[in-house]
Amino acid sequence: MVQDTDRLWMDLALSLAEAAALRDEVPVGAVVVQNGRLVGSGINLRESTMLASAHAEFLAMEEASRFLKAWRLQDCTLYVTLEPCLMCAGAIYQARIPRVVFGARDPKGGALGSLFQLNTDTRLNHRYLVEEGLGAEESAKLLSSFFRKKRVKKALLGVNTEDQ
Image 1 (tube, rainbow, N blue to C red):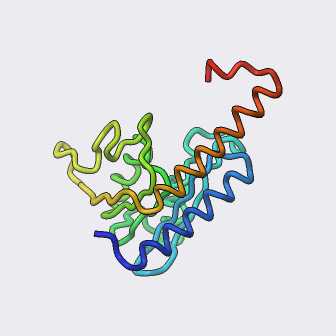
Image 2 (cartoon, rainbow, N blue to C red):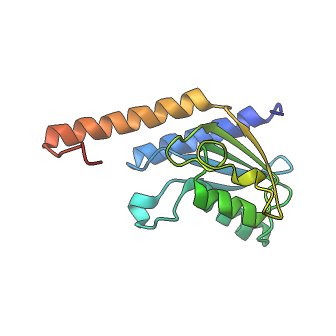
């Protein structure tokens, strides 16, 4: 169930997604919150770091773990603008996060409802609550705008965009 403060944290994640877009990174932002306080944040940094694992939620969880000096984030909520992928859903599982709130679904890579339902897989020893749709419209708009600009730029440069 979406809580009163969830909008505040999702708005912060959305502002981080906007910051990622300004760095020419896919606009995804994430925050980790523990008992009403921010303990980790991240933006997508795959292009600038050249690391496949530099997803916003992955980086936010790493920062939270360093801040809390714990790998278990059992009393935290992760807010992320885009549905986590399989790698990030697995990291959420490993960190024992009990609740994830995400904005837009990812029909090509989402692992918390779109392609997979990792959070409720009964073969695993930890399951977590997922609430989706908060900030979905804003997140989808950011992503669409970002990729539209990328396609226009490639077209202007004469790069074949059909293969991407």
